[in-house]
Length: 143
Image (cartoon, rainbow, N blue to C red):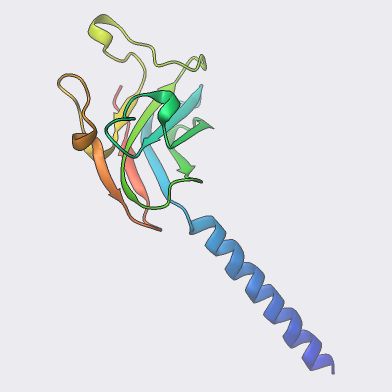
């Protein structure tokens, strides 16, 4: 009887750990590298088509996470897989907006998926990647 109780407890523990692991890795994860400091937030916007691209209110997912120097890990909760374009910026002054200068050049850290650095208006097709279930996406911020 005592062995059965131990076995049942182990089984419940195993199921709980398995469930929690699936919950953690069931969605995509972004790894934002090159974060210069801990100040402000990392803002991430996920777009699923060219019609919504860069229209913030039409983003499929928006995540705002406290910046951590060098690397900030951002879990996705809505987007699982498929073709997406990711826009990331380091909102250093926490005002909720990307600070820009002459010709709208960003003054805060920013990046697009697919290591895309636009030479004009950003394009969904050039920034798009294939999000694969369970595989992290690594993005390097540009300052």
